[in-house]
Length: 144
Image (cartoon, rainbow, N blue to C red; front, side, top):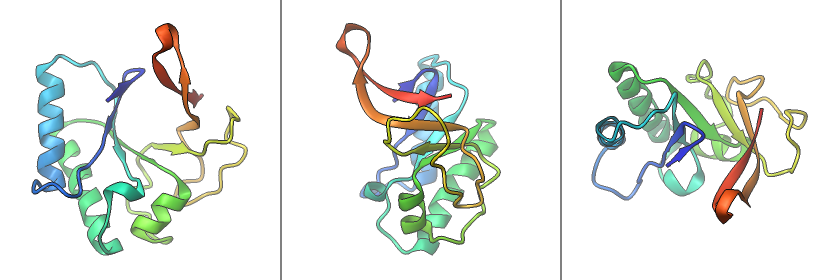
């Protein structure tokens, strides 16, 4: 899915394809379609990860490494709760990547951000789940 030139990758945990293959397929489809996006955001939410933290960490690293190998900028889309549940509270290996943090609090600022995963500040804050945009198309509200 592409939002404001941002592409979000939803890993399929039940699929037989490894995450690295999934992201490769996603990127190939985007490039073949001529999609214009700046960052591929890896969604790290509870519904996509069902393994031990060490396995989840490796799956995330597989995607990051694949994006790096293909020259594609990658970021992480998650919340503090999801991140700490999925990879554990002390894992900071990808904290150099941009963070798209979601907390549906209706506030278009970073005031309620509590550091996690090595991030001291997010790049983007998604502060609502969905609102009706032009032509009643659902869209997310983001800050900045």
